[in-house]
Image (cartoon, rainbow, N blue to C red):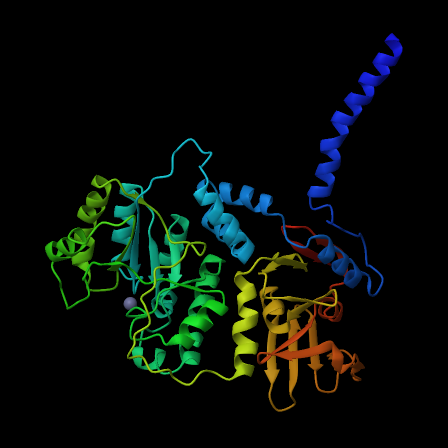
Length: 460
Ligand SMILES: [Zn+2]
């Protein structure tokens, strides 16, 4: 009897131990697959397809872990990556429902929130604002101009390092260009986005329209920006610091403090040249919100943006062609959608393609040829006469002819037939399977990994 009892107990113990383990296996990104040394042709493709199927939606529980950590401890770069992962519809839902639920953290969530936003920078004044914010231990959101960011990348870098959030305020702020057609607006957003990504290694989906959306955005602008994965933020407190030149600090403070207090205040200020008075007013504005029990936060793509209503007088400008939208706006949304980044290691260099910067088609990883190679350190040029792509990477000198489907190395006379189907043209750029690209450039693949967090291709 005693023996039976012992046997029963041990079964119970085994069950108790093994059940969570089993669950864990099912839960964890068990689909992580890696294979050592040159896989047979077609193998990578199959692996990716299998892994794709195995992780239908990267577990939201895991996202929450990432999110919690990113809120407090991670550097700006890591923070943005986790936001990137979270900004899908599912994640937004999860994020907003967790916001409603009681927060398990020790510090109770403050009810009243103020978002300080600074537009048109960076300029020499930005560092003064950064110093005030640091002293007061608060974070703000900066909607910067690509033109200015290009001239002062070090200030953008300092902003990101200090944990402030950087948004996109177009390249040159010129209404006549920006509000003439949506494509012009879009091009400036993309141009600025790339400049900021170069500096901070992250991609911002936060946008503020120069002058605000009212009277500038028609329904196409609103709709396509949303479709493209962007969050366009207006404001509900205008500090009035750019109503005319040299608005005195006292007037700026008066404008801000006379506004009716709401639970959520988005304050518009400017940090471009000539706004010394805004800098002067800032400490008083911060004091005012502190005294009224506000906490200071940064704008996030997960929150519902404050937007002005569509102006009734606004006449719709011609919308871009369907084909343009398909080539530009729709694939862009994936940049901010859920999905893993793709890390490529080749020749001792690692680069990252964000979700949306690469595609998975029938299990194959398809990458933009030029972007991928350049980030890995190769030089890529286009010979318009011969319609060839020239790749120079270390010792390698390779000429690709997408129309004939050939590749020719400098050390050989005869081009090798690789097939036109290896190349794809999309959105005005040339794409290729990553596998083909690495093989053609003498970087054979040694392993392919696919987890819920990332895809990784390692090559020699
Ligand atoms: Zn502006």
